[in-house]
Structure formats: structure tokens, C-alpha cells
Image 1 (tube, rainbow, N blue to C red):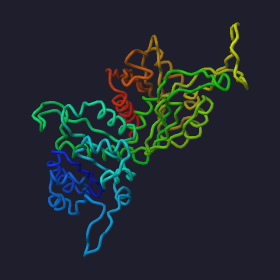
Image 2 (image 1 turned 30 degrees about the vertical axis):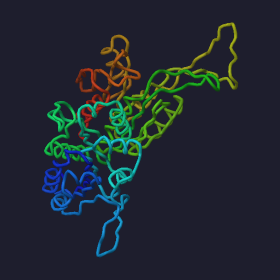
Image 3 (image 1 turned 90 degrees about the horizontal axis):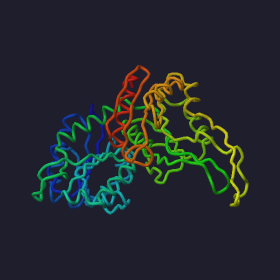
Image 4 (image 1 turned 120 degrees about the vertical axis):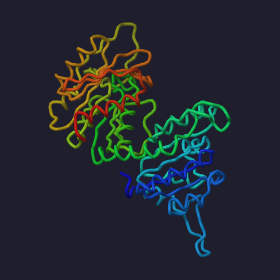
Length: 400
């Protein structure tokens, strides 16, 4: 599984750094090539000599090193290109903030900014630090940037407090890395189309018909698919917080017409398409050239139907897996089954709007129905957790 995999291990200056030699040993024993990078303060907690001996490579902590009296450059760019995976463990609050802000005052963070490979980070800090709003905000930022941020473990902390903030044990990190490459092998070279967010249908140059979709569910799906090694095409309507990830291709659109054109162009080239966007069902039949002035009388706007993107792709699909979403306010299961059949889908995700599900929320609860007749009810989970369930359901339909 890990044979000849190139893994960067970034170690920042927290007490949990003392555990990292065991992780290096496990990775090397499994056949991986490991290059360790430390922040300058990390050497206070773990020996560079120990890490170099176990990894069979010099552990790097500075931009330069001495070789036969000459100063040699440790290229963060080359390191970022070399790796198949970058694991940062432990990730302290200080290094987390630098990564979230794009600062690069040490070799580890500069390499992170240059990395072209997936990144896994394991935060480790004291309980009150871990739940501080600024730390939570920075973790959310890393997730939006495409980093797979692991939950901290619970237990006794260095301060003597008991709670969440421990770095996962080296054996657990090792197993997670193995699982990552296992997923990568399943989805490697697979291409996936995901659309997300609302569409805006113009009434005049300043007004539009839209909806409250935030695109969060689609973004969670794109990030999960990217983690699994798929090549992701992310077509999204206007979003308040558009994705910043460099790890998948982004195609921003505004109207249903643009959304349809982008999806139609990409669909023949992918193996999976997940359409989570809230595409407008109607648009004004005529768009005013100038802003419509307010008047005392009522304003009538004639509407015409937009193209049903999901149904159109269902009519054209060959051996692709096509997944749709349905937001239902009543008879969710019955209406979902009808759409599954009528739109020639392989899987449909049915949910209902509430204060904790649907548009704009960070959580969702859904029913997953597939063409084989399988039904799965999810509990109320984060949209990231639901995206895992959706992609697992796709794997059950198609032996990727």
C-alpha cells in the first residue's frame, strides 16, 4: 500500500512532536519514502538526529544547510512537487494560523504553500486553545482550502486538563495514511463532475430571481472526492464564500443556461456526475435592457422554464454514475423515488429544509435512494460527513 510512496512529514513545535519518530518508523517499515520537515521550535521537542536516522534522510528545519563548507538551498518548491502526500502532525495553533493566512516564515509553511499534493493535518493543542473561535476559524479555512484536517483526540493533555486536543496516536495516523492511499487507488484517474450553489436569472441589469443555496453541500462533495484521488470539475453558481482550493478545477457560472452549458461540456468526459446545485426552474422570458423603475402599479413578469440539467444528462448518460439531489417539503420518499426513475438516475439524495438542514446550513439529514432499491437514512450530520456517505454509496453502485 505505501511502498515507494513519497510522504512529507511536517512537525511543528508542540509537545506531541515527541511521538513522531514512531510514525516515521512505521511509514519507513511499510516501504514509504519519508522526508521530515520541522519548524525551528519543533527541535526542542524531538531530536533531528533521531528523525534523520529513522527516515534515512536529513531532517530539514532551515532553508539552507552546510555541505563541505558550502551553503546549499533546501528548495521548498522541489519538496512540494516531490511528495505524494504531505502530513503535518502535530499542527500547533501557531503553524495553523500561518497556513491559514499564507505566511511563510519557515521551511515547513513555505513547503505547504508550494505543495501540489493532498495535505493531511493533525491539530494538537490544549483544550481551550482548540475550541477558541480564532482556531476554529483557521481550521475551517484550511478545510475550505482543501486540507484534510483530522479531529483532535480526547484524553489527558499536557496541561493536566482532560478533553479534546491530543494528536492522534502514531498508529492511528499511520492507519489513516494507509486508508488515504487505499482511497486514492480506488479513485485514481477517475473524473467527477459536481455542480453546486444557486443560479441567478436576470430580470434587468440589477435584479434577478435566485434562491438561498450556499453551495456548501457541493463543496463538501468536491473536497471529499479530491481527498479520494478523483479529478474534480466543480461547476458552481454565485457563492458567498467561493472555494479557494487549488486541487480541483473550478468553473464559475451565473445562470441556469451557463450551468447547463458547462455541465453538458464536461459530462461526456467524466465517470461520475453529482448534481447538487439548486438550478432555477424558471427564468424571465424577457430581460429588460435598463433597470425597471419602481411604479405604484403591480409588476408582472412572464416566466419560462429553464432546461432541466439533471434530466438532460440522464437522457444522455452511457456508463456514468449520475447522482441528483431533491429538496422536498412533503412526501420526500415518494417524490424522490419518482425523480430517481423519471430522470434516469443511479442515486438520489432527498432532504427537506429546516433550521438545521438544507440551504445555508452546515449540517444535513437525507435519504439516499439508489437504482438497486437500497434506501439509507442518514442521521443529522455535517455536510462533510454526508458527502462521505454519498461517495461510499457511489462505490457500492460502481466498482471503482
